[in-house]
Length: 218
Ligand SMILES: Nc1ncnc2c1ncn2[C@@H]1O[C@H](COP(=O)(O)OP(=O)(O)OP(=O)(O)O)[C@@H](O)[C@H]1O
Image (cartoon, rainbow, N blue to C red; front, side, top):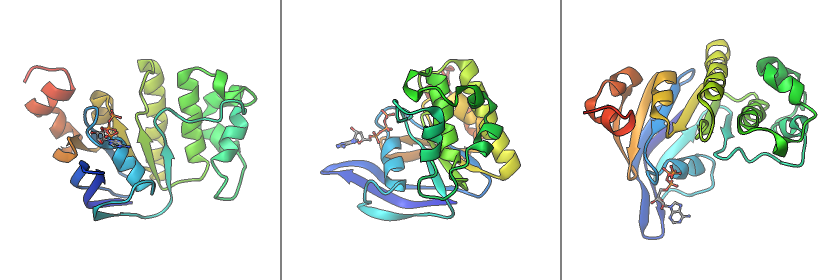
């Protein structure tokens, strides 16, 4: 669904992505982990067409939707209106399928999005992205600032969508434990380069990854 091939992106003289290659196949859940400044947001922005590569290519098959870092909801609007805006380009504004997928949102539908808790807002951002019935979802820092129980709920919904509809996911996360638990495959990005990749279980078992990202002794 996503193929990134030797992608290089620069800000002036600074290289933010340096020959990055990665892929997300249909029905696959893939994690991209890495520290602050590694280039994760640059990759998201490039996939969404906001930055132009200096070199390399990327291709997206099917419909891609983004759950952006910081959620970016329309704070004065209701949950229902925020969901509808998720389909502004793609036809049906019917929100019923989202309330069926994410039942927690049902009781919030008339509430103002800006007055919801962080976890509730993240659920709305996920619902808004699902409104366009995407084939692949890119999720930027889903767990940021959320309680573990809330994150577990969101992760459960992603697993369900992946299992039931074959939704492919690229999960960009600072929370490496969550990302490696949830995804089949993972990439580690450091200073603009992929420094490790492979099945999540294998990466979680590597001493370097464990020491750098899981808080375990190497
Ligand atoms: N608009 C910009 N102009 C110049 N440099 C930038 C710009 N945006 C990002 N950078 C630089 O590019 C590099 C990658 O930044 P990016 O935001 O992609 O990293 P990140 O992995 O998303 O970090 P974080 O986890 O902190 O959000 C960093 O060195 C950053 O300082």
